Image 1: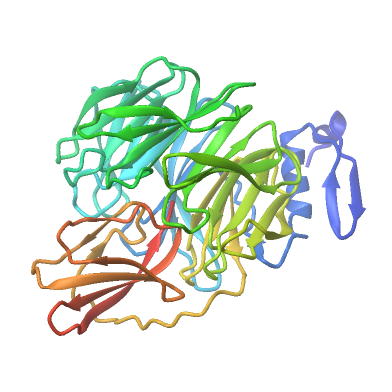
Image 2 (image 1 turned 180 degrees about the vertical axis):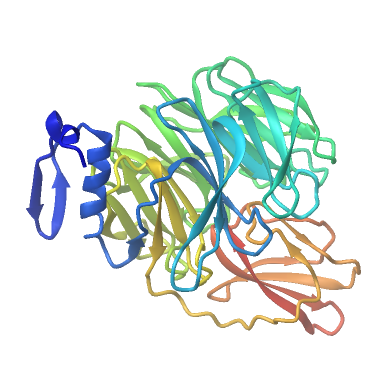
Length: 474
């Protein structure tokens, strides 16, 4: 390393209680070196992977190559608003996580999205192309190679996907935060789209998420509005055919709202909203009372101001846990102790700063949830937690094709006959769904991230025909 790298930049490092802490740094290369040095002194609950020297922003996790392993799509931004769209193909072995990187030859701007837009069983992409200022649909050939189809839709820079109009294909909800506008891109069933405005020039919309928030079996939109003093969380309740009723959910103003996650925090069967602010160290939530009212709770506090979080059952004990990413302090894992109260055991797991993105996935195929982390660089952590026991038996000889698996919202099942039922249970044997296959694909958006078992059984005899492991990811 040349001496000029160090000439005008410095770091003061203090060693205390087996942790190294940076008090001052200015050079990004120096920051990487410091992170590499002292993030190895982290917990035994998660193990940080090696430094990849690859840029990573806005990661997406799904099986893009059709081999049953979770891959990662990311945008490599190098001091620019746009960046190279990269596919990190998972070639992991049982004892290690390994990715092979492929350049998809797209200059992407904003947050890409994914879904099976042409209903062929593999994961396609939607992204804004900075060269043409158009939205591109990248249809997957099944092996992680893509064909590009420009759209005439309204320009947007962030995408979420689900079946909004209930016609059994995947639509796109897009956000143009520069114009504070939300659009709905209706899928015609062949991977081409018709655009309709949902919100136009309203406030400063920072983030959107999709879920059946009001329990009426269609997909709603939750929008987070950024304001330094008076941020809001709005529900856009789907009333059918792409029309939405607007309702402000929070009573107390949210200062500098940045991230939201929709999840059943109190395990009462309805959806709650966890949210973070870039000016606060406390993760908060709006708890759904079940009568279209909500009350606010503090979930857990981080070491410093928050930039990211993710909630999942990381140790498969049936209780939700939390990972918090901070701006300039250590990042922490909070293991839930009770399913009916928000009490956690806390430990530092990594010192990557600022931790801007946390995306879950079982990357080493060992039936627990690992995570991809991003601070502009590509990191991951491997789950070392003791996991809950599995009491179900998986039948290896599959009769029915189940795809995509892992899945985000919808699960397709190759069932022709009407005389079978479907039972989905978690790792503790708790029943999450009993269906008689009237509606396929199955909307499992309400499930928390994690590993489940799906049993397909004969309705007359009750005989189990097939049991398969399925994985829900965000």
